[in-house]
Length: 303
Image (cartoon, helix red, strand yellow):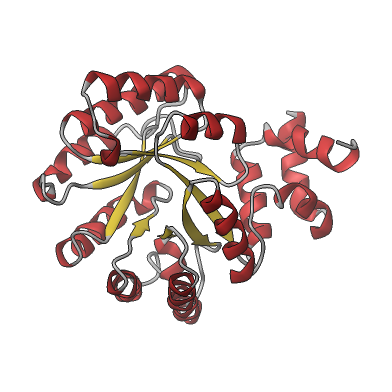
């Protein structure tokens, strides 16, 4: 209850105070900040996926501006020779306002990335967006089979059937490419698993289906039991190291990340940046109130 109360209050705190905590998990506000963070990770042998913060826009003018910013980002990152790709949230391009406009914007972004031989990951958002984002992914994959992937969330009860239904567009030459994560949005128990053990069980069930069917998974977790479970499945199905990768958020569990890299597995870190960092941070706090007590310590306790 205390954590929920603090999480609800934090959006009204001065931004400078919230930044004390947030800067560990967000590269900064500018492309220059994203480039700096990405180059540091690349030096450690870690790939990146870069995300401009922002979602659930209110006008299509915002969607147009967001598209232009992504196009500029892709051109800049290419010039900087960064080993990385990009993640996009469809609601940032008007998915819930006009899905056709959203598709046109994201198609243009994917085409730009494809012109450099690069890749766009379509993020999965909350449950009202799920069918729309799967539809969007199918359309993009048909035109850009090598240049687009999707996120799936293990806590949704529909996820394994969704993965199975998408196998009609899978091939051994161009496998489906997913980021498999637990899921962070607050969803009703009717459609989402709630217990830690249940979510982990279905995460590994989804991952096993991918690995044994030649699907390329981005194993996105900071949970050591899931990492260990992934190791066992990789060994069980004798999966070559070029057919999967581990993924983590910027600034989260760096020691576990280092241990995965040390074992020779591919690691990719999600690098968010942008002027919308405050909204991103406070939304994540509401979704995970347990973080609130850690933030209070960061704000008021030295070290």
